[in-house]
Image (cartoon, rainbow, N blue to C red; front, side, top):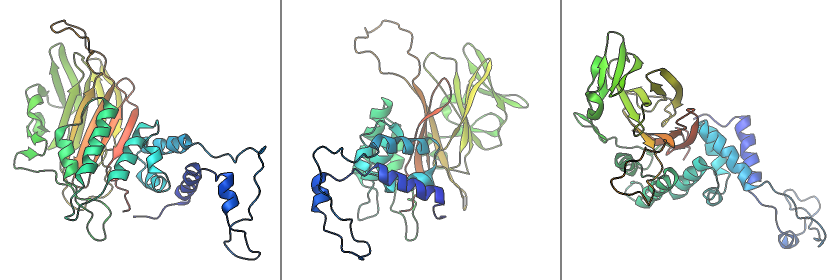
Length: 339
């Protein structure tokens, strides 16, 4: 792992200042007097006057906003340094959604004597994700998180079990799709392929998904309830952990394309494996909804992509209209964890 550059070090200094409040008048008066010529001695105390304004400090919200911007860029290296210089408890109460989840996990992350992840850390993170998204994360994703093992000697990244089987992984079965792709059984019957393109058959018509992916690629497709926009991701099953595209498609063409950071692998020393699931988020059903009464489904509030691989788990959430990333979380700080 490379050492922090000058920009990162400057960020750490900024965040440290932002998350440190100025001492009170009583604390200043309690400091020991500096001795002339003594290196590292505290400054001479000053007598606080009642009519003086207290020393200004940067609001914690500024530090949270800085960290949130780093998270939305999946800048793990700078973010790791920034979190280390911050008050995690304060960040857990911030208005920045990515920062809240990251600080929650960093504060809870611990391992038992046998090397397994502490169950309270997994439960705490699952509860925080549920509160943030308005629905629980997929069960397989939580089970993957619970499989984490303490980093081995000399390593900084935890090891995870993706639950590989002869026919699939922890999420379930993978089957052969058109054009030598791999897909989940639920969409196998609605995917078709021509000589040079994939398509998805909706009841209202066919949506072109684009050129044929490389043989062996996994194709994931999801859509909002009652909507015709498809959210499509394609990634290399054996190159687990690297970034991959997410596209919003309709019968009229592509609306937007975004990049899923996922665990954000930077190096693969062998064959990897990744699991991904696209979940379209909806607001909860109204409490006064009458049974049997047909109502149009509410618009989607987000497109969440849950990812997992042998060295991490991650969550990206995108705005369904623009494709902008609105939340980003990684168990291993986008492959930049240092301890």
